[in-house]
Image 1 (tube, rainbow, N blue to C red):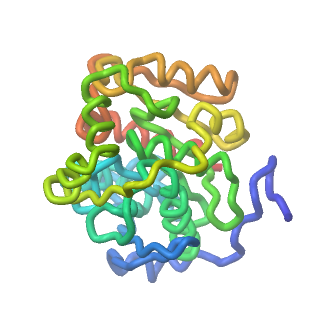
Image 2: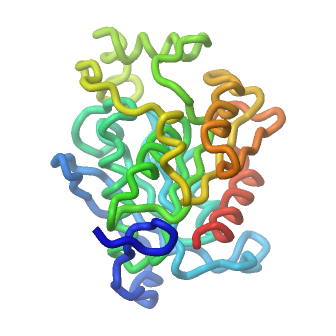
Length: 284
């Protein structure tokens, strides 16, 4: 298998068709390697922010793929808001994980979702983007870490940012995580997920248990890695991001955000703009 610069897999030789991409947004259904239909959308990006000025370093060849948190989907207002800010820094691909929104299948809560993300990244590259950055939140944060560690040819990422991600599986140390475990593991919880949260959850346990985020982080180098976490996160306390950063000494960049809570709802526009600027400067 051939490799590109500094251990990255070889990039597609398809040249960007920027005039085509600027015609407007796209909506499609992607197919994962295990046959699941994934609802996905593409926004070509904006040339100006709300002040009418284009962000410094806005790159036409950059696509940012957004991986939402558990019970989210690409139509949720908080996901659209995040995507809207990031569109000031490049094209944006959003998608709904399996079992969420209009996508097929059932959620495996971070296991097979790496296939969904890989399909979205591959689509961004097929659209002609030579640089792709993945940004994930909570469950999506664990997925972008595990995906980046695989370095899949044709579906690899040039930089990865994980926001509010867990470091280890089966954590039940907070009340929200105990409620989430009830939602996932109990039949009545899965009914609440399906009819109350528009999330269809698989009833089977993981077999085998996938590599945890903290096990995956050391394998991500040399791909640039950003870990973002709020010091008021009600789901995962700050030992989670610190554990992730310590697993990649000298490689991972850690932002501990004062007063921030959990995931997309807590990531304000200013933080998302900083993440967008980081993506521009670190994606090769």
